[in-house]
Image 1 (tube, rainbow, N blue to C red):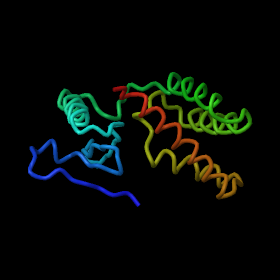
Image 2: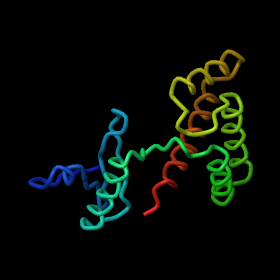
Image 3: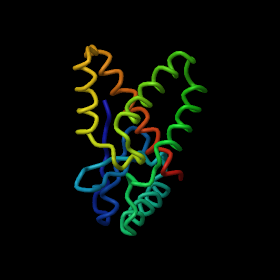
Length: 156
Protein backbone atom coordinates (compact mmCIF):
# COMPACT_ATOMS: atom_id res chain seq x y z
CA UNK A 1 0.00 0.00 0.00
CA UNK A 2 1.30 3.43 -0.91
CA UNK A 3 1.50 5.92 1.91
CA UNK A 4 1.15 9.59 1.08
CA UNK A 5 2.51 12.39 3.17
CA UNK A 6 1.45 15.93 2.36
CA UNK A 7 3.46 19.03 3.11
CA UNK A 8 1.26 21.30 5.20
CA UNK A 9 1.75 24.98 5.90
CA UNK A 10 3.81 25.50 2.75
CA UNK A 11 3.31 27.71 -0.28
CA UNK A 12 0.73 26.73 -2.91
CA UNK A 13 3.36 25.06 -5.13
CA UNK A 14 4.75 23.01 -2.28
CA UNK A 15 1.33 21.48 -1.64
CA UNK A 16 1.72 19.74 -4.98
CA UNK A 17 4.40 17.47 -3.53
CA UNK A 18 3.54 14.05 -2.16
CA UNK A 19 5.82 11.56 -0.46
CA UNK A 20 5.07 7.98 -1.46
CA UNK A 21 7.27 5.58 0.35
CA UNK A 22 10.66 7.25 -0.06
CA UNK A 23 10.00 9.01 -3.39
CA UNK A 24 8.60 12.49 -3.91
CA UNK A 25 5.85 12.91 -6.51
CA UNK A 26 4.47 16.05 -8.15
CA UNK A 27 0.73 16.45 -8.63
CA UNK A 28 -0.53 19.00 -11.15
CA UNK A 29 -3.13 19.60 -13.84
CA UNK A 30 -2.52 19.62 -17.59
CA UNK A 31 -5.39 20.34 -19.96
CA UNK A 32 -7.83 19.82 -17.11
CA UNK A 33 -6.49 16.35 -16.26
CA UNK A 34 -4.88 15.64 -12.93
CA UNK A 35 -1.42 14.17 -13.46
CA UNK A 36 1.18 12.78 -11.14
CA UNK A 37 4.85 12.39 -11.93
CA UNK A 38 7.59 10.84 -9.88
CA UNK A 39 10.37 13.32 -9.21
CA UNK A 40 12.82 10.42 -8.82
CA UNK A 41 14.27 11.69 -5.56
CA UNK A 42 13.96 11.16 -1.84
CA UNK A 43 15.38 14.63 -1.05
CA UNK A 44 12.77 17.32 -0.33
CA UNK A 45 15.03 20.17 -1.51
CA UNK A 46 15.67 18.48 -4.87
CA UNK A 47 11.94 17.66 -5.17
CA UNK A 48 11.05 21.34 -4.70
CA UNK A 49 13.55 22.35 -7.39
CA UNK A 50 12.12 19.81 -9.83
CA UNK A 51 8.56 20.91 -9.06
CA UNK A 52 9.56 24.53 -9.78
CA UNK A 53 11.02 23.33 -13.09
CA UNK A 54 7.76 21.56 -14.01
CA UNK A 55 5.72 24.63 -13.04
CA UNK A 56 8.02 26.88 -15.11
CA UNK A 57 7.51 24.64 -18.13
CA UNK A 58 3.77 24.79 -17.67
CA UNK A 59 3.80 28.58 -17.17
CA UNK A 60 5.92 29.03 -20.32
CA UNK A 61 3.27 27.18 -22.29
CA UNK A 62 5.30 24.02 -22.76
CA UNK A 63 3.03 21.10 -22.05
CA UNK A 64 4.02 18.17 -19.92
CA UNK A 65 2.58 15.98 -22.67
CA UNK A 66 4.26 17.67 -25.63
CA UNK A 67 2.75 17.63 -29.06
CA UNK A 68 6.19 17.54 -30.62
CA UNK A 69 7.28 14.04 -29.54
CA UNK A 70 7.58 12.35 -32.92
CA UNK A 71 6.37 8.77 -33.00
CA UNK A 72 9.26 7.57 -35.19
CA UNK A 73 11.93 8.95 -32.85
CA UNK A 74 10.24 7.66 -29.70
CA UNK A 75 9.59 4.27 -31.30
CA UNK A 76 13.25 3.84 -32.27
CA UNK A 77 14.38 4.57 -28.69
CA UNK A 78 11.69 2.31 -27.24
CA UNK A 79 12.70 -0.56 -29.54
CA UNK A 80 16.33 -0.29 -28.44
CA UNK A 81 15.28 -0.23 -24.80
CA UNK A 82 12.96 -3.23 -25.19
CA UNK A 83 15.54 -5.31 -27.03
CA UNK A 84 18.07 -4.58 -24.27
CA UNK A 85 15.68 -5.55 -21.45
CA UNK A 86 13.53 -8.39 -22.79
CA UNK A 87 13.78 -11.49 -24.90
CA UNK A 88 13.85 -10.88 -28.63
CA UNK A 89 10.52 -12.62 -29.25
CA UNK A 90 8.69 -10.70 -26.52
CA UNK A 91 10.16 -7.37 -27.64
CA UNK A 92 9.38 -7.97 -31.32
CA UNK A 93 5.77 -8.90 -30.49
CA UNK A 94 5.15 -5.63 -28.61
CA UNK A 95 7.00 -3.61 -31.26
CA UNK A 96 4.81 -5.11 -33.99
CA UNK A 97 1.65 -4.30 -32.01
CA UNK A 98 2.65 -0.67 -31.50
CA UNK A 99 3.73 -0.29 -35.14
CA UNK A 100 0.40 -1.71 -36.30
CA UNK A 101 -1.47 0.85 -34.22
CA UNK A 102 0.51 3.81 -35.57
CA UNK A 103 0.26 2.56 -39.16
CA UNK A 104 -3.51 2.28 -38.79
CA UNK A 105 -3.98 5.54 -36.84
CA UNK A 106 -1.60 7.52 -39.07
CA UNK A 107 -0.51 9.98 -36.40
CA UNK A 108 2.92 11.56 -36.42
CA UNK A 109 3.14 12.82 -32.83
CA UNK A 110 2.11 11.45 -29.46
CA UNK A 111 0.01 14.52 -28.73
CA UNK A 112 -2.52 13.36 -31.31
CA UNK A 113 -3.09 9.96 -29.67
CA UNK A 114 -6.35 9.84 -27.73
CA UNK A 115 -8.33 7.21 -25.84
CA UNK A 116 -11.02 7.41 -28.53
CA UNK A 117 -8.45 6.66 -31.24
CA UNK A 118 -7.22 3.63 -29.30
CA UNK A 119 -10.78 2.43 -28.66
CA UNK A 120 -11.61 2.66 -32.38
CA UNK A 121 -8.46 0.72 -33.25
CA UNK A 122 -9.26 -2.05 -30.74
CA UNK A 123 -12.89 -2.20 -31.91
CA UNK A 124 -11.71 -2.73 -35.50
CA UNK A 125 -9.39 -5.52 -34.36
CA UNK A 126 -12.15 -7.20 -32.34
CA UNK A 127 -14.51 -6.96 -35.32
CA UNK A 128 -11.84 -8.82 -37.30
CA UNK A 129 -11.88 -11.69 -34.82
CA UNK A 130 -9.25 -10.62 -32.28
CA UNK A 131 -9.76 -12.13 -28.84
CA UNK A 132 -10.29 -9.82 -25.84
CA UNK A 133 -7.07 -11.06 -24.25
CA UNK A 134 -5.02 -10.12 -27.31
CA UNK A 135 -6.76 -6.73 -27.39
CA UNK A 136 -5.63 -6.17 -23.82
CA UNK A 137 -2.07 -7.10 -24.82
CA UNK A 138 -2.22 -4.48 -27.59
CA UNK A 139 -3.39 -1.93 -25.06
CA UNK A 140 -0.63 -2.86 -22.61
CA UNK A 141 2.05 -2.57 -25.31
CA UNK A 142 0.76 0.86 -26.34
CA UNK A 143 0.57 1.97 -22.72
CA UNK A 144 4.17 0.89 -22.14
CA UNK A 145 5.33 2.73 -25.24
CA UNK A 146 3.44 5.90 -24.31
CA UNK A 147 4.80 5.93 -20.76
CA UNK A 148 8.33 5.29 -22.03
CA UNK A 149 8.08 8.23 -24.43
CA UNK A 150 6.74 10.58 -21.76
CA UNK A 151 9.37 9.54 -19.23
CA UNK A 152 12.15 10.39 -21.70
CA UNK A 153 10.83 13.91 -22.20
CA UNK A 154 11.66 15.06 -18.70
CA UNK A 155 15.30 14.33 -17.97
CA UNK A 156 16.40 15.85 -14.70
